[in-house]
Amino acid sequence: MTKSIVIFEDIDQCIQLFDVFKEKSVMLSEAILIPPISEKISSDETELLNAKANILFKSQNFEDIRILNPKLDRKIRQQDMSRWLMPFGFVAGIAFSNMTNLSTFSFLGLNNIGESLIGGLLGMGSGYLGSIVSSASININRNKELRSIINFNKEGKWLVLLENQIGAELPWALIKQSEAKDIIFLEG
Image 1 (cartoon, rainbow, N blue to C red):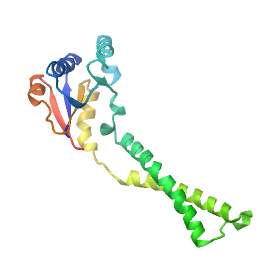
Image 2: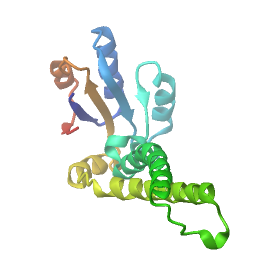
Image 3: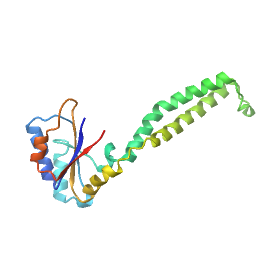
Image 4: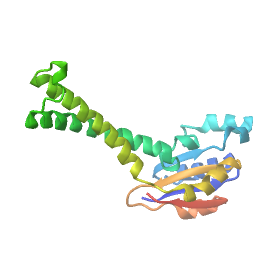
């Protein structure tokens, strides 16, 4: 699937593109309008954005889009990994405690069940730490790729994130007719 960012000078061009997509029944997997930082938006543009949002397109802020925000992507990845690593660590901790019959916490006066539960809790903690380390170790070095997009957003440009559906091409002819300032392709 191809993801691309189409850059426009003003919101009217974005809305015209979405209108053409609606007229031609263009089906996209994702079409998100990203407004510039709030200081760069006039009150008329804000009204137009509020009126047309959710009818023609979905509108999101730059920092709320996973592919454009590596910190958000890392946080979501860590949460997803902890969802399966923590229960796995709990079960592994209990299994390890039962297999080894270690009495590490005997000074607390615990029986075998208590030792197993503490082993499970320690395993669950290890799973959580593992999710943090593993999500941080995957380095998606997008900063160079994203720098120009961030600069466009800060300059007051309107961005449209488009993603085609599987097996379909983006409507390049329609996008080129929209007189976009620039088109940036994103990987993955």
